[in-house]
Length: 99
Image (cartoon, rainbow, N blue to C red; front, top):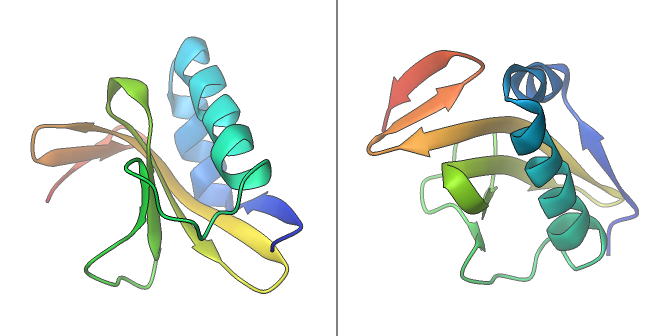
């Protein structure tokens, strides 16, 4: 089991881009799903990505289309990206990526 959560600088920038209410939703979701529970345990909202990218191995789905992409290493969970999904697009810090 991991000991803590670390945010990559780009993930913090993505988080700051969100409205304050959604920032709270993300931090509460991270605390509930990645700190208080096993980040490797898959649920309907927390699962391993089918396509591996160098950026993340897991996705956490939260309300309002919010997404947290993360990796799990021996001693910590690393949050790599935070964004909002709308349709087939993921918005990360104001930039939109079509999936």
